[in-house]
Length: 271
Image 1 (spheres, rainbow, N blue to C red):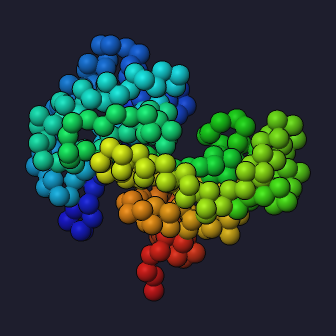
Image 2: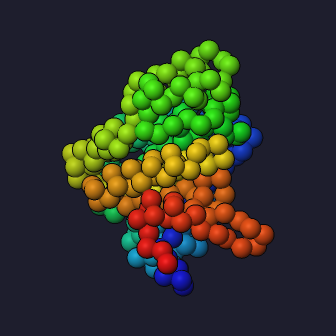
């Protein structure tokens, strides 16, 4: 804040015990869920010292609730009510379950609070953005050189690099879906229309592509297309992340080195 940066403050993970099930026992354990709401009310009291113009509150990053996504909205409603008692003027972010995917945002009924924004994360198509990610689903781990934009012709190289037949079929399907800037825009337009229908504000506070196995020219093109689509419809955005595997910068010892091509894809002004 002192550096002139607004802060999106979230609780990023309750538990890492079950892979990427960041919301842990929420909705599964009633006692823990009640304790979590009390925790946030107490934490909100501490955060009240910060200017509402510079601090946005996000109760839970990527709630999962896999297979029971409908349990999250009433918990979120209770969480926000508890936080609002202590932070009457701060903007609060609400989101859908299933890792804050667009699909669950579109099922939400907005709360009766004009100072809530609704956020979603955008990593579509997953077969491209998470190719080779060692901590992700088993089926993405062997993926290499998955292209963007996609076409039946462009995926041929990536198909030869995997042995599992089911993954080859998914790659072929990805090629046939022809992901490009227009298709990305159509996906984001779903959020735009949802927001317009409900008269609410939306925010994409995570998007990005895993760079370890993604060829730089493909990653640059995807990041540029997502950013342009978001900006076309006036949606604020934040790319995941700064200097790690989805990053804008590389680490050389203690020094951060900017990836200028990605900076340009983000529309940033660089020297």
